[in-house]
Image (cartoon, rainbow, N blue to C red; front, side):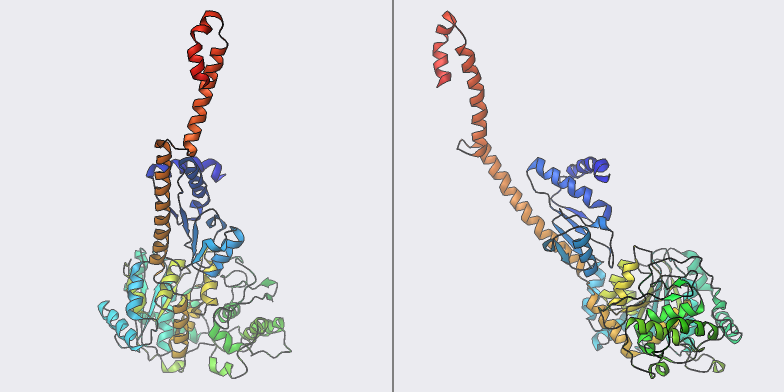
Length: 536
């Protein structure tokens, strides 16, 4: 119906610009403009090249892919496969090149290099921290960048509270930078927050066995999301699938909450979406015990109190490289006793000994500088944000996504090994995983290197160069064709156009000849001379 209702108007609009090239960056502006370009080409005799730049990362709508365009630029193999399967786009038209992002990221990525831990990169990052007035030029001081898009969406306030408490208790010297965007209320709340009161509320809640009640966590009604995917652990690029029934509910892949959003299932999902925790727990369950039995036992055992067994303690129980089903069972078994994977290393009575500061910012335009200065990004699963982080080798903790549209972006991060997903309905889970990363130098290096492999800081320039080269070729071809057509119209040789004109003239003369032939008598005699001329 889009082609029927919109194509003619689209064609008129395109013709009004007399363009040399058409570039689409929206799924609704692919198939209809592609048809319009073909009709323009047929009418004018000049090829009008059209290119599609897919601005989704891990998944994409089928309307992105029109197989009549000249080239389709995609950022991932997942989108390339969708182009082949849904759009029937031939391989020679698909170019995997990365997601276009601002040039600032390419500038900083070049200056920093691919290895964040290299001496040159560290010096560059410390210089940026100083220029941003972060007051943390010590390379051992950690910076956590928290953001929720331009509108500051998501449970950012609760996540920041959880990060503050967890980093303090884990003795992590850190600065939490919160990009509030246009959310003025959030920025005001961050600026005026009594952090001693936040810590006091946590301490009281923990002593009372209240878990995360101090964060006023609410329960989201309903089960949503995609029900199959449990995690994407293992080496970068590997993935598998499994499903798990828990008391009549099906474990959602990575999405949020719902009828199974309990303390136990939050812990399961956090473990299954994080390769570090998954590998540490992958063999905790005896082979003879079934997942359903483990859930039953775990529910009763995890009813109160926080967990306090470390990752190292659990990892010592067995090999860390089990399959998907074993991983799910191991995660369930780990909840069999009230022990947490990421509990504070020191005793709670000793009090926190770290130093954490929180900086709230509004809408910023120098995001590249903050990402280079940071050690970890905590954000929603926007494709642009993920691509920007990967371009500067920044590990990513994802906390939310738009169902369908952004779900594949979570897979992109987790499958490629440069981040994890923990729902923003579990702020303490987010904080625990981030803190565990910051305390593990080896893990941070692995995450950063994996991000670097996926990063494409120069994608925008490369896409523009490719489109420009193709456009110039077609422009030159069209110019030559225009010259040839003009020569055919003006020359008297046996060209195709001349032959066509001669045939038309001949038909007219033939009709005139027959009209003279029908004359008789004096009229025919008078016209004899004309008849002879026409007949010849």
